[in-house]
Length: 196
Image 1 (cartoon, rainbow, N blue to C red):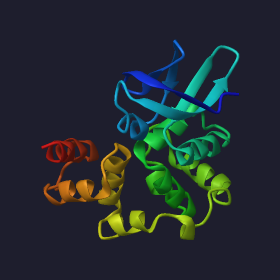
Image 2: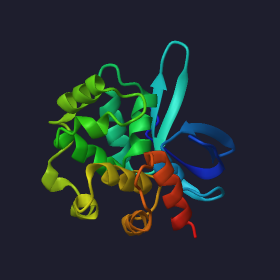
Image 3: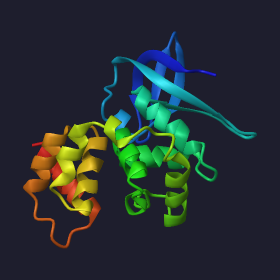
Image 4: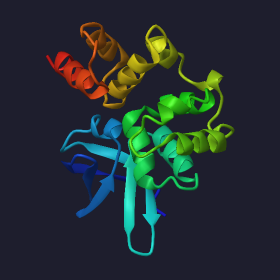
């Protein structure tokens, strides 16, 4: 099993990177959070998980050990494959996933593409005793979103998962009239505000 790979980011795709290590290029599927923290040409260490089935061998990788550990826990749940695990970590930061699980927040978990309420409930039930405690979570994550509604909190967490710091995400949301807009519309508008 490959635990990690050190190398140069040769290419970034929409949901993967190609990492060069000693002249060999590794295709590694990854989350939006990891993607947005990487630049082509930089040398990095990527924590990896090798997924083996009869018809496929695939590498999944992340920039932090916390992310890979949550990914492994997610895919240990029956019915949750690597693509769904990746979708969770592309929607929320690893610390937010822990918070959602520990708070039995089925609604927020079910907002992830590919996860319905039944699967969300199953993930929470099976992982609640395996992700630590609320005391172990970053207090920063709680403070950042506590003043907002659950819906807006999810949008802020999505922006954080895209690699923006919490203050940038909060400021961008504060400058947007969100009335009648979908989550995607709000996120697109927030990205424009952040990138100015």
